[in-house]
Length: 101
View 1 (spheres, rainbow, N blue to C red):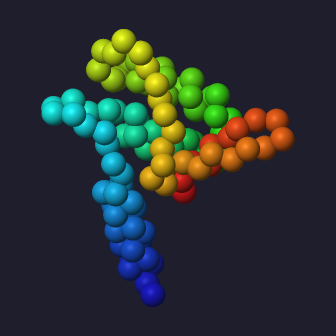
View 2: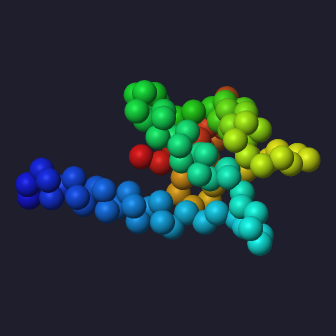
């Protein structure tokens, strides 16, 4: 298969993955944590950072992003994703998130 065909397949696969992400909503209100987690993971990928990230680091970074870019809320709970954006793995010393590749 040619390089262009392979790239088209990767692009289509990525678009299907993003299309399957479920964003919580109530009326016109939407929860921004999953779109922000996608952007966070893409930025880490583009910087060449490791996919394994301590949960407390992701939690702190995502909380900061939610406060800056999310709608005003009484509390901020950047829950992890259950639709393939990240996997939670227990290691001997910490929980880490394996960001989707």
